[in-house]
Length: 379
Image (cartoon, rainbow, N blue to C red; front, top):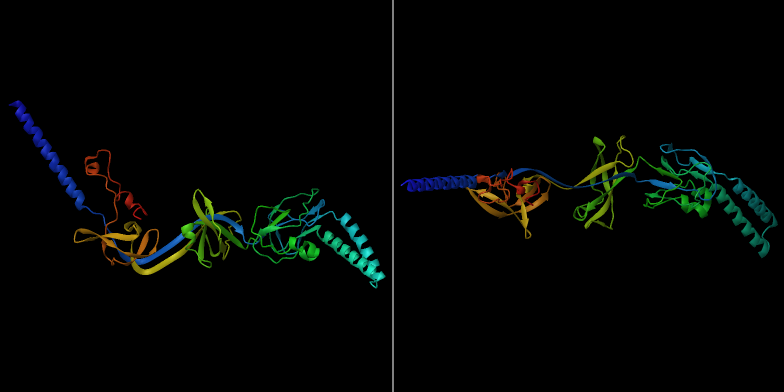
């Protein structure tokens, strides 16, 4: 008798627990999180990070070898076009110039009436011009107005004598070219090199013409065009922003960790006074915008098998509905068709099982509907 009563009690408890479980399930099934389609604006943007550089910079070197006699500038100094930056000891060069001039004057006096005299004249003239170029090459001048960013030498040291310069941007300065003639003109004249691997005796940059080169992913770079407006923010300068434009999209990509990226140059329209060369910055470019359109949270939109859909809640029933999307932003997506303003949508959720949340067996639901509710998770 006792055993029978015990069995009845156990069976009654099991039935009660099962009934309670069924009630919890029903309650869970009828509670649906929804979002509402509204009318507003959608902005799509892409971004990348990089360092602030000058769009007009140059690494300058002497056009001849010698011993550094004087350096007139230091890093941070502002100079004007044509200012003398440094010079070499030119005693030997001046002596060679004097000798070449005497030979040249003698050849001029002798005339060019015969082939032999003409050949002597040409030889003397060329030697004199070369001596002039050598003297001019002992002086380093600023090819444009700018700021000295580095001095890579000292008084008493030697010069490389490479006569070459490297930098970025295209300049037409002829501070060294005019003095050195055709032999050295290309070395210190206009430069269109964008390489920064080599350094000169003195480096100069125009800090009023700044740019940022950011590496954009393959998909983001495909949305960019030259001339697009850009906004630049700076890691070390909260609240400071600059505007600019996309001026160059490199046609050759670089690959890192299997990620294809394209360098994109953004030139500043106006440089805030606080900005310095080398500062880390983030550039954002708006690649799409739609105003007064039907919008839904981007988390409510799913794409699978080439079809984009949302889940509509109509008369208590959930209906998977194909939609046509327009501008896709981080938080909002434009819906061109398939959804009307005021419609209720059910964002995708992740099912965690029939017993996880209610019986607390180590599962539990994710706040806000699970990982699908995290921004971008539904997509």
